[in-house]
Length: 279
Image (tube, rainbow, N blue to C red; front, side, top):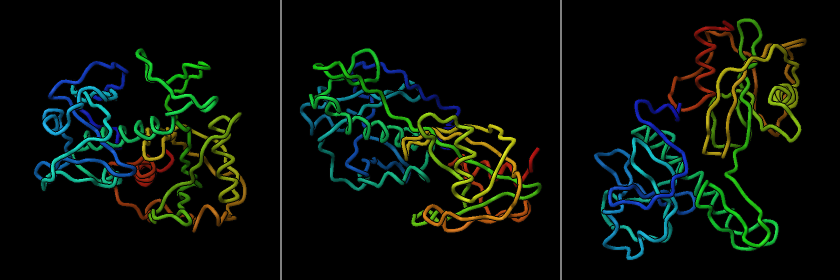
């Protein structure tokens, strides 16, 4: 999956130390990211690459995280060279881009870029928020409101019925591949309750024997995904929520239409069932 970047090491402890010339810059413009291409692969500019064109480069920055001991910083309003190997790309490039550890760094930085952007002012009194020096948090100097990065819990559900798996496709989305039932956890709800509710709402089926599989940080939607397998209980007739799904149907394990990738929890769960069934 996208976060599986071994042997590279991602460290997200908040350590707001000043950048060095060899530190990396993550620069975003809405849904675009600045890429410094190296032999057709993703790379990011270093401070040393942009210092000649940016007088205040070492003054206005936000520490993000480190990968293999190299620090990454979020910067705004910078000038970058008009060269062939520099370009602004849609952040969707991180779904397929290589190397994987830099794609993960790029999309994780984008999640923090969005969070800082929508937490600029206090939601309680409207005062300009300030950055904490001790932790990844912004606070209001007037009313002491504190805000931490937003992470939305959601479930992915592999609904099984003997040798069959329920496969679905989303309605009104660009993503047209087969997927599993999914949905966000509501306030006051356990994730197991989310599994049962989402399956009932989207396909009208009752499930039990809910078993946890694995989790995944999914920065594309500020989400922590939790994967579960659940067994059908009762009738197998599907009642489709057409506002959420374009289709849903049962597939025999041997006939599951899927291509293995190293990106998503959904894909890994489908492949897992195709190879192993309910075992």
